[in-house]
Length: 483
Ligand code: GDP
Ligand code: GDP
Image (tube, rainbow, N blue to C red; front, side, top):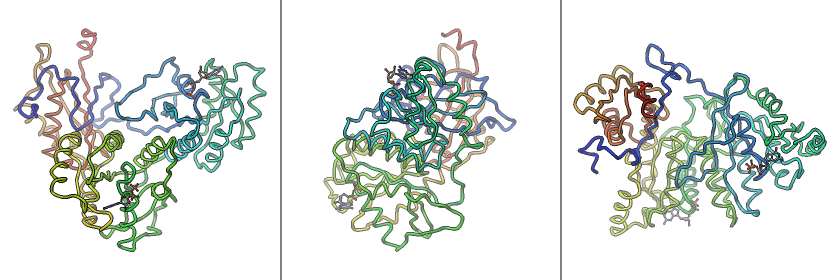
């Protein structure tokens, strides 16, 4: 590890940003900070999910809503781009649009994939827009999605797209057959009817966005991992061992697809266990379906247990699931399962694989278990507790700044263009996961960021939780000069 002794070696800006997620923000004016340094505008915005089969015009509609021709797509290597979120606003109301496109399962897996997409939207969005190509009419896939969406408690708006002229409007009416109410005629490509559609969407949004479930209830756990690592075996072991499937905890409503399991004397909500128990093993679209399911479980959870088969080499598929967890910002416990099959040789190999493949998450809690024998499964409890405590942790602004001042005095940021960037102030803007904002006078090199993050972790202990750091550069004139 070269950065150990060399904070901020120049030229490494393109390197991976350590274990945390760093981002730069130059819009100083956008930041409203109150006297305690807390951002004022942290109100959650409602989420509108756009669903529908391929080619109906979802992306075109998203771009129409965003009022620009081209959506900036963030490509994260190794992550299936099955959802992209954008900030939008209409009539002064801010909301987030989630485009669920970007995937092309073949015709066979299509219905299942689109239905899964709709289920995901029902769990995570505040309103759902089902886009149908009105020039084609309702296809079998459209009907399958509509069937799923008719159960939705989240409002559903039916957009009859490609109604490019008044004459075509009659075609929209045939979509009443989907049983989702009045079809809203729109031409995403030309903008016709887009304003009316947006009015209908906004009217359907609840006053307050879907809230994160109240604190104090059982903590929510997602059990994730590639197929055959032992997820359902572990679930059965946990549910069986303490004869513990709790039906009801006072004051909580549990989604029917979740399961309450008592461990270490308290109830835990294992999310989307129905998806784990009902194994979908169709040949096509399976990968995609599995990744959607993982995504949905992570969305609903606070902490993830990533199951890895310790008896086999760590694979690309394991790392893809890991990427999804990192992206989700959830706390993380890695459970190396099938430990009963691990001999000394394998153990040695595994250690090397961990160093090589899991270097992104040195902070993750690790336990070795065997779902089939039950070995050490109870060790999951302290690991989950610890990870969640880190995830919830808040560092007081005063303490953070005192500490930061000392660290920076001892090891100042490297010069950049002959200037010394200064970190003027820092605050923890959010928890779950801990998110920090550093206000600086200049760009901080990647190596220096890793250094700061490592020291932050050492000082405040965020074991088991990701940490995010946003850097806000104040000096706008300097920014402009550089461009
Ligand atoms: P997605 O796969 O659902 O995201 O669909 P796209 O947004 O990529 O659109 C699929 C195709 O339909 C593209 O060729 C678009 O230009 C076309 N399209 C989208 N909206 C309209 C519309 O309102 N009218 C017409 N005539 N074509 C449209
Ligand atoms: P899932 O696809 O992740 O839900 O995996 P399953 O729970 O279905 O397990 C896949 C296979 O691994 C099954 O044959 C299990 O019996 C086996 N398995 C699961 N956990 C263990 C374990 O701890 N030790 C051993 N030896 N086998 C296990």
